[in-house]
Picture 1 (cartoon, rainbow, N blue to C red):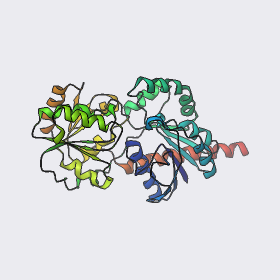
Picture 2: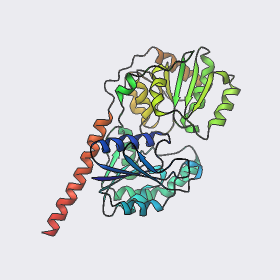
Picture 3: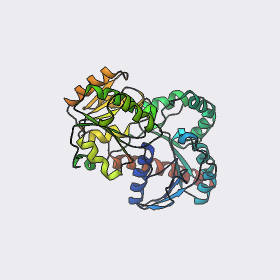
Picture 4: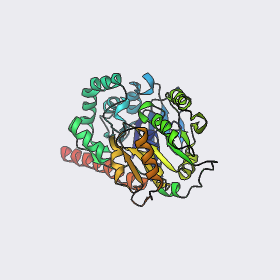
Length: 359
């Protein structure tokens, strides 16, 4: 089976969607399938080629602020590959309609990673204008996969789409057995893109209540300069460490060494980094918004309802005393096994229908 994964960008670019696509692509290759990734991140320094057995073809896109990716050429690129399955990721990246156009002779599976909004009124307006096109793409899909119960409910509410839920996987053993990162002081941790909606600024401000703690920030993004300014104004500049891009192999140790992991994002369809932190045995503080709400049922997670400094500080104190149970965290093997089942069922149903028509 030849599967084409369509995504806005692919590792070494960082991000939850990027990590998700890489995890399923490499495991599909290990299972004996042919996988080609079609991404819209050419020109970012990342090159086309083969990565861990996955063929990666990168194309240029018009990408305002790095949020949306207008790349109509991916449609013809997908068609030339003649795949059995086209699997499109990230409704918000605007690549779905091009994947749908190119999938006339293939089965279309969509994992929207849908979070229903954005951090700016302008982007929300663009999403409203895009809604009819996005609706068409989702309606065209042979299967829609949500990565959380919260996302499934949002897709049903906003698009009247019935999605199958397959939670993101976590390589639990890899995180649980890592050697803790050696830092000379106790630290809080954030991992992810540096954007305003991710809420890192609230953690920086809360750092004033914990003079014994540092904050380690792993990731890059357009909001870094603002965060550095906030750290300076909050008089915690010497305790806020901006690591920038951190290789994937170094992340487990960072998680393992942290006193608490901070996830205060306003928009998430799953919250993969929370699962990685829990797998490392590190308690988490999460904002009860979007799919982060679903993590509230896990032992080791403390939720906050707003980003008030005192509320965050109390949650950090509580997290320090909270034990973590990672036994119920889903793994990637389970995710890919269920995904392969969806691929095969859609292909088998198509073959049976074709056989009936040709009799």
